Amino acid sequence: MARSISTGRMGRMGLTAFVGLVGIASVLAEEIPDTPGLTNVRRQGWVRFTLNSGRIVVAGSRGVNFSHSGSMVRGRGETLSVRVTGNEPLVKYEITTSTQRFRLDASAGNRLQLGRFPEGEHSTVVRAEFVQNPNEPVALTVGPKDHERVYRAPTIWHLFLQEPAAAKEHLAPLLKILLREFDFAEAAKEIESNLVHTAGSGALPDRTHWAEWVRQLGDPSFANREEADRKLRASGRIVVSYLQRLDPNGLDAEQNYRVRRILQTLSGLRNEESPTQVATWLSGDPAVWLALLAREEESTRRVALKWLETIL
Image (cartoon, rainbow, N blue to C red; front, side, top):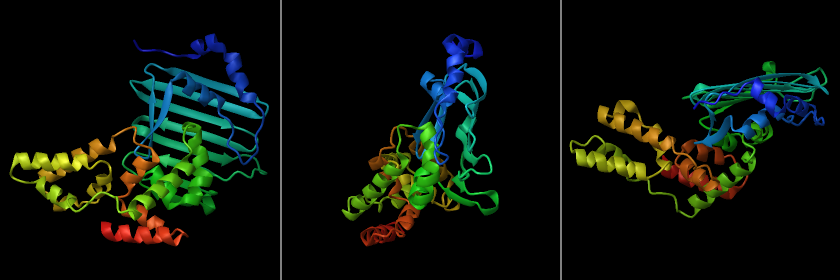
């Protein structure tokens, strides 16, 4: 049966205690403030944030309908609204202090906006906004509007590999609010280390058969088409980048249909976000190796160049 959560239910939990959480000890301006309301919602299981294929996935408990607006207490104010229809959540959250404002806006289709903004004329906080929309690159915008820099990449992991300094300083603290179990900066280091080690050892998968299997997806024989389909799926997520770069105009209707289905299946695989698994997935993407060509370590640049030549 659908579960309905309202301010009345929160009252039974202790609304006074809930609001009191807002008034915890102040933090340095450079730190993102604690988010007691959002933390409480996560603990209750009303909203869940997970990571899938380098993107944030938002889910919720059916029937939740809750809102809360707290007045300024000890220099902090907090507003929260959660509504879940089916499994599609709508979350709006904001916490304001004397030096900064943090905002979260999540809606159906895993649309997500995270933002951190300076408050007050003496604030040292740097504006940072992260946006994730379906079928679009993720984007990180840093700095005031008249001097902002925008970084775009296919996924969060691409962003950490392609723009490590900006991602570590500005994006990692924002994502930590949603996924406290992840240390994104450290995970990105491990991913890069796995990429370099695996490529340097020559243990990356053989890509020479992929083009033949794609050609075979359009074979007149149904059995041959099914066999090629199975082999491409068995390659795992490493083949995703290759398939995404194929020109649809160079494929027939059957090939396009099967490629779309394979991409949909492989991109939707969950529970594959360990550094080793992500490295295997990303190893087929030329953009990743191009990013590693800019590293200071010569050994990394050599491995990146060698594998990039193999890919291209």
